[in-house]
Length: 355
Image (cartoon, rainbow, N blue to C red; front, side):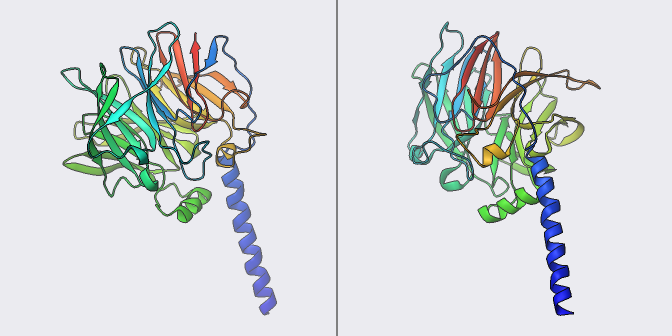
């Protein structure tokens, strides 16, 4: 009888493991084959060798690039070096990157570990850069003032909050106001790994202001990129392991109401929005397992989606760029400006293209 009980429990345990493993592999999209979509006028950007996880282009063509992310469970080519913010002027014929100097009496540049970024331009045209950072595997938002003439960032403030434990990305709606994604519920790395494996879908989106911090959306299987429509009426959220882009209506009291979801058949990372057309440009991972289990002999591929008329009943989704890792390892973001496109990656290189 005891042996029968042991065998029964063992069988149930193996069935449990097999069912969740099957789901895990499907969420990671491990069976996905990349069909190459090439662009003729692209080149790797000199000076970017450790990733460009996120980027944002100002209306004047200046692009901020978040470089050097060190994220638990993901490859880093320079794990002992701090990250940096790069600047690129897309108005130039052959644009190059420049590292922005970061100043501020209370800012520790040695622990800077930049992830998602967002900008806010004040009424006097002052540009503020908000950066998700992970000093010592924690989560903060670092607030900078962009000093264009000096080509520098003046650090103004570090934002921490108990509702912001696992930050991934953010979209600024004011100098110190933003929506942000937490990509996990648990902080402990061991528990995070089980959360990821079991697909608990406990990550969320938080609205932050100095006087009001609250969860405004939840139930995501790895909430990732977040952005906003040009008219500021809608918030777009990428749910990485569900392969979905969610559209939420934003209200005057900063609450969000779910409007629709779009299935993408790829792991959607950061979202950039064309301020002219309203199109979404999304950096994607065709096969997520290759990101979390890096093999230089079989590197992760890259994919860029353009989504037009996302509010329509049937939005138009176009694969603008796709390749199997021979050029880029793990695209995370894509953004366009006047016929030019930048594509960044988690930990490797970045691409500059002219349409």
